[in-house]
Image 1 (cartoon, rainbow, N blue to C red):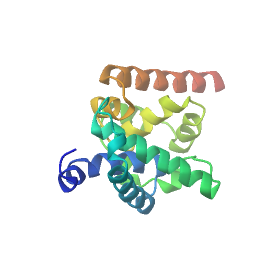
Image 2 (image 1 turned 45 degrees about the horizontal axis):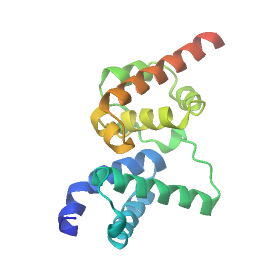
Image 3 (image 1 turned 90 degrees about the vertical axis):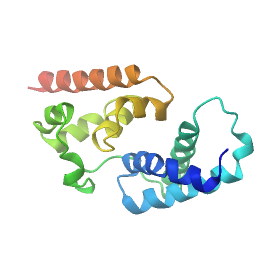
Image 4 (image 1 turned 60 degrees about the horizontal axis):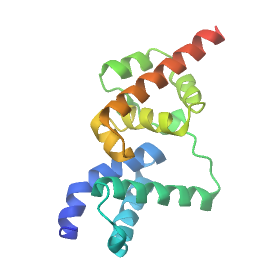
Length: 164
């Protein structure tokens, strides 16, 4: 592993954005990002190099978040009030499609999706990550991320059509 300071500078933003997508909380994301790097330094000998370092760090951060949820006995639901408006109003085609629908309903509908689909949507919409970055974080290809995002959108649309 390269110098820890260089690694920290290079991957801090990626880990932080990923955690923010999961937690929807700036302070918790910052704390868990710090814990992620501390844990990574302690366990660097366990890193086998089978995946990119950023993927390994995001997996550590995800496990820390799950541990935090268990400790606080919370359910990881995204609340509309917790999401800052300016994060959601990024002008991309996918987000414009979603923003036309009632956002609160959208987030409720997203909770009905499988974990991977929900995670891809959060990372894309809230984290403003590219399909390539999402694929890297989740250990998949950018094409997988794109297809998963598309299918999740279609599933939400179908469910909304069936409710009407």
